[in-house]
Image 1: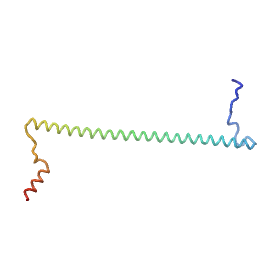
Image 2: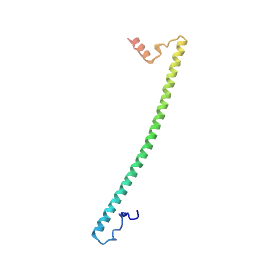
Image 3: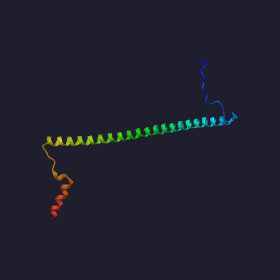
Image 4: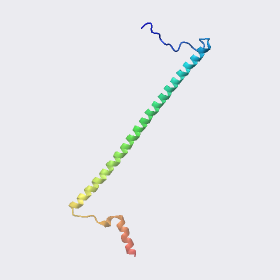
Length: 114
């Protein structure tokens, strides 16, 4: 295990070597590192935006659910009142007259004028 060669990729800086080939190796390593950092930044921004989106989405869904629950309760109350009114009229043997509606009053006025 001691004789296994270790590959060291970052051995020198830009001005450390005097060969023309060393500069090209440095430039390639530097470009790879810059690309890696750029990908990390892009990934961080993407994750941050997704987290913010999910937070806003959860808030919108919660608000919509609250509105739906409120309207559902209102519909149920109206239905219950209507049911109680129907039971009350059937127990009293009274039927609601059709003349109570606003549409019936208008029709009777028109007939009187003719």
